[in-house]
Structure formats: structure tokens, C-alpha cells
Length: 157
Image (cartoon, rainbow, N blue to C red; front, side, top):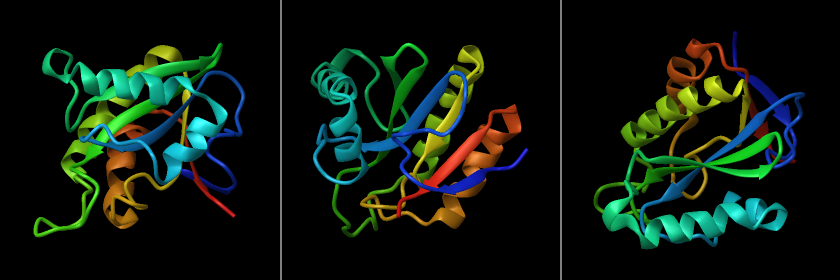
């Protein structure tokens, strides 16, 4: 099994059966730029859940490496994965945190397996988070693909 690459919109997953749309969020509670805008245009629930999750972070596991699924249709979920520290590039480099993304993807593999779902995503961590796909792709392969989960990565345009 390998990652399938398609031109298209990850918020409109091209597959039959249960599906999870996965994306990377920051650890600040900010939701307002990048792929999250496409998610919010289609479904209000993931943003609402993310903001509430962040507000209650003192006691609910919110933080780098955390993953939470939000059901948006009977056979469709959005995985909010906290894989970037802040929103700006600074002395510690870009906001992407590969270790956190790996942890998120491992949790996602468990969720997707339990749901019998395929996973759909943009090139996570490589937009505003500043990551490099050649470092993220092996994480996807070691977690999702190795678990036998169908993965489709969408390149917009």
C-alpha cells in the first residue's frame, strides 16, 4: 500500500465508505489561516470543537501531539491534530513539530482503523507550519500506511 496523490480539495474526499479528513493545528488556539479556512467553509463543528478543546486545555489533553476527531457527517470525521508550536517562524525555526505530527498520526491510525476509514489530507504541516513534505511523508508511511490505512494526499489546483 502506498500514499495516493490527487489534484483536488481534501475537504471533498474522493473515496467510498468512512473517511477522515486530517489536518494540523497550532497549540495556541488560533484558527484563521490556511487549510482550516477551507474546513470552516464546509463544516462549522471542527473549529467550534477545537476552540472549546483549547479553552479547556488545563484538563483535557490538548497540546502538541494531541488528536481529536469531530464527526461532521454520518461517514465523515475531521481530525484536528496539534502539530505546530505557535504560528510564526522564530529562533526555534518554523512552527512545525515533526515529533508531534508523528504522535498525532499514530493516534489517527488507531481511530481510522476502528472506524474502517480512509484518511484524506493536504500536505499536512507543510503550509503555514513551514514543514517539508520529505520529512512528513515518512511519518505518514510509518503510521497510517503501515497500519493498512488508505491515504490520499491532495494538492490543490
